[in-house]
Image 1 (cartoon, rainbow, N blue to C red):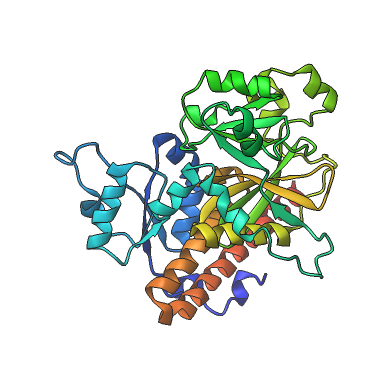
Image 2: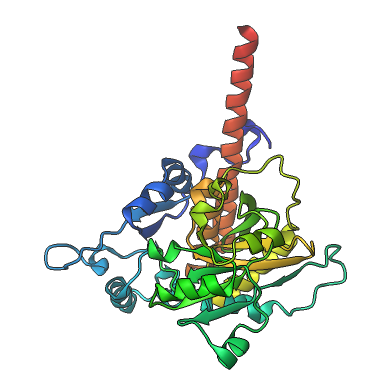
Length: 375
């Protein structure tokens, strides 16, 4: 990148970038992890101001969402009729504000059956002949049960489902109960599980996958994939030995909660183009911009992948340079939706700012290098 002195326009002469007011509404823990100083600083440099939204239980003594606006865009991860009503009333007053993402789209991810329907819709799409991996995507066999099936019902309902299976609550609403999952190794274990619950349970076929899960993070069209530890493979001998058992995930392997990058892990990452295609299918099918999805690769067939989970607005702050991806996404979206005719001008201004920022970084690096040499 060229030094600052070669820039066609100096920083003092640069036209001011239009500022955008982005309201955000998160639970306290989510706000603490996502709204980092690095994000606020980087976004502010490119014209984005993040503004916290306060939603009280009662509107008698505090500002409503309408009174806190207007915003160019609202990003959020709050659920329930109270918050949805606030958004509905706000949108009637300010219909030009972008709501990311629509509550009705997010709600599909609260149901573990409907969340994966979107994958089923595009899994049969033929692979291109130029794809050297010939990768295919699908969903593990799933069955929803609320009681133990007997006789012919069991034959019909559980057809094609082999043990072990993963038992998951139907609702995936972020509550502690929604994360209570376990492995079931036989019909006997399933009967015991269903005897102790009165809520629907989703049974998902367990697929040996080498103890590694690939997590795809999406911010609009930007996609990044990382490796994480997962449940270990299960042998036929283990299935026999554990017949009748119900093993909570927390008791299976300590490494299952290891979220460190697997720098020396031998498992090859899936092709990025393939991950981007899956992300596009989910983004378009669910009309979502902020999500991640868990993908595993069949140990028996390296070209076969399964999507096993989709989450809304995940922990982006764990990813390197998430500030850049989020800022670029919001700028492109707002420039296009608000003022299409000025999009090129905005992009030129932002490109100039990025060049100046890179030049400043270069100057700093040079000065630091000279200082070290003098020492």
